[in-house]
Length: 108
Image (spheres, rainbow, N blue to C red):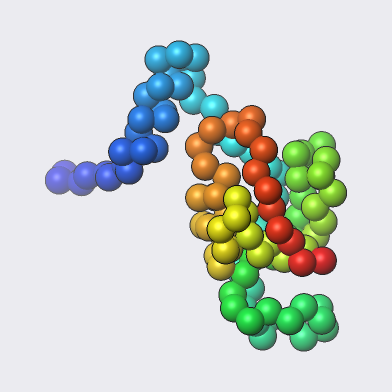
């Protein structure tokens, strides 16, 4: 009853193209479980963060993340050369196209 949803046009274009060419939508998958952290999150980590960031708390077996040796407690600082401050930045950084490589800067 009167509800609407907005989809960014760039996202809609990618999805429409995939539906027309493949008959289905392929989503990128890296296999990470993530949490937002702030600079005062856990002093025992000895991870000096000046701003909020994202920490890896889990990795799926056999996932692309495991294959490139990402580990729990790694802090993601950048993805695709863009600063990461929250989990949604990671999802934005991986985009909508499956199969492409994306540089990720982490602090271990």
